Amino acid sequence: MMRYKGRLMDSLRHAGRAGGAGDTTASLLQDAARRGVRYLDEIGSRTVAPPPEAIARLAELDTPLPAGPTDPAAVLARLDEIVGPATMGMAGPRFFGFVIGGALPVTVASNWLATAWDQNAALATATPGVAHVEAVALRWLVDLLGLPPSTEGAFVTGATVANFTALAAARQQQLAKVGWSVEADGLFGAPPISVIVGEEAHPTLFKALGLLGLGRERVVRVPVDKQGRMRAVRLPRIEGPAIVCLQAGNINSGAFDPFTDICPAAHAAGAWVHVDGAFGLWARASRQLAPLAVGLELADSWATDAHKWLNVPYDSGLAFVRERGVLPAAMSVSADYLPTGDGARNPADFTPELSRRARGVDIWAALATLGRSGLEEMFERNCRGARRFAAGLAAAGHEVLNDVALNQVVVSFGAPQVNERVVTAVQADGTCWCGRTVWKGRAALRISVCSWATTDADVEASLAAILRVAAEVIGHRGHG
Ligand SMILES: *Cc1c(COP(=O)(O)O)cnc(C)c1O
Image 1: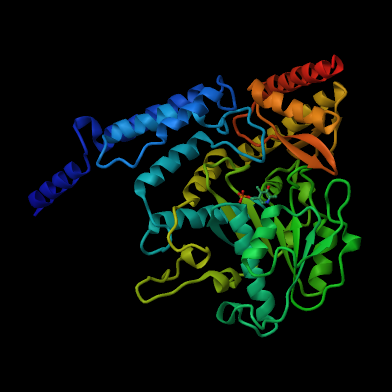
Image 2: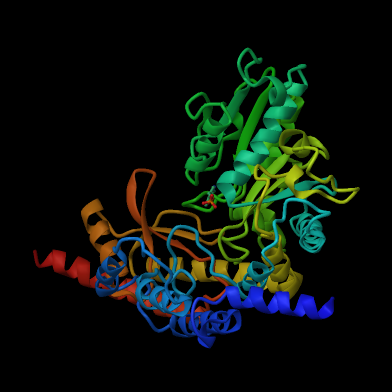
């Protein structure tokens, strides 16, 4: 029996090879690791944006689908040689565009390992190892973020789907309260749900509302203050089923809505309060930053990203719902062929997906490696970097448009055309990468500091580059 099994394994292994001994699983994975290590070793010394020559070379991939097999080692080499140089240096220390974390080395490694495991993380009894580690990660997160102990969570692809997932729970609960089962009967003929959002809600929140049949436009928009915070005194009168959507971390200013003022009023009217905290939720993990997010724990659901500030690989987000059982009421699935959790948490009862990669493995690895103090240090270092950018830019006479309380800086270099030329020149210079935005009607450069890899020295080098480039652009304008 053992001998038969041994021969079976040999022939299966052999079938996995397309070519010679160089193409075994081990050599392919070692080759990938070697190439990945070299990429990450070099990322700090290359230009952050890919050079135009690298982008031009992508045309080499525009071939017909190969008629037959190719040596997998050659396929990997092609990816590394053609696609690698055309990547944006998001994994490096000086990428400040959008809100993009890097990936902690241990999470890149855990991601590779979990990919080797190739677990379908839907069902606790089928994949007990990853289901267990994900349950532990959720428990740690609820504690770290200071969410109510009853909170349940789901591992999803990002904050868009986390908003969708949490808002599906909100929709379920608000309609169940008035005797309507939206899961069974849908929205046709259902009592209407009022949806209240801030003027500065993130575009993906509207997308999530649209997907849920609540409508992207069918919302009441509450005016905001100079930092983009919802003005609590302008909250409308709430009656019947209602969802109030708040924000922890404005995409431009980094500001937080006034949870302490709004949550009690919304709850008194029976509404559900949801918080989009794609990056701002992590402020709760730092003693220095947590006061910005005070009262956030009063909400009913929260969405966040792990691929932003927790610095795990794409794609990774989290949805949390305070009241036990509500998330499964919106998401659970059952079939005769699908095992129940047998008392364990069955991951598929919490997520929109059934089949799914075990994203929680990387999250667990990040939390286990950094611990409370390491996480705090990373978040606070990034915010210190943002404050340093703001101070250096202001000292050079540029106008910082936001209160830099978190990790976001919005700076104007003058008229829209001038600002645009500065943004383009900063990106082309390659020392760092920052994006553009329009904040309160002003064209501006956005700096978002949220990578584990960004040191104080990276901030200084990037600040110097931005100031140099801006002086050149503004100087040239002066000479016509
Ligand atoms: C990034 C972001 C989102 C969307 O997150 P994805 O991970 O891209 O889906 C939603 N809300 C806010 C405030 C964000 O910053």
